[in-house]
Length: 167
Image 1 (cartoon, rainbow, N blue to C red):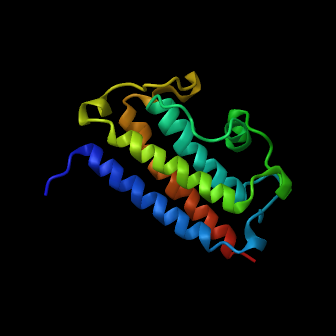
Image 2: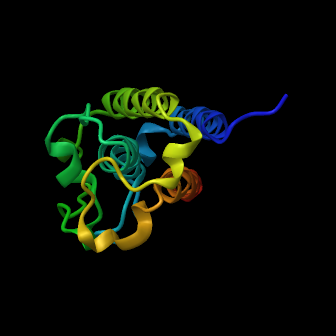
């Protein structure tokens, strides 16, 4: 059965979200703040970063939807290169692990719902939200951002799994 492009993106995001949640649910508590060196990302930061990937970048900037996550998420979990807060290993600086996973899933489901509202012609257009100028052509056409953020999720999922596997 033939699928349109939007259906392929929906299936990709459903699969991506499921795989990331499967990895995250198996991260032992003592590995959630594991870093290789000071200031580098740990699984807790990565999960928040992935949540804003869905929420702010895809739903907000690319698709023009109102972000669903708390207002401080974007600042806390965007990269330091983008002006985000410094990464710390203090658990009190972050939501609980269970809250992060719930927020990641909520953001992912909102993204999938927003993707389902598109038709294939929308994929060739520009962003419906307002991405920062520094992102250049990443959001035009919008399909680049949608596909790129699925890759982004897989990239960070691998980092999460690697950090959890290291002693």
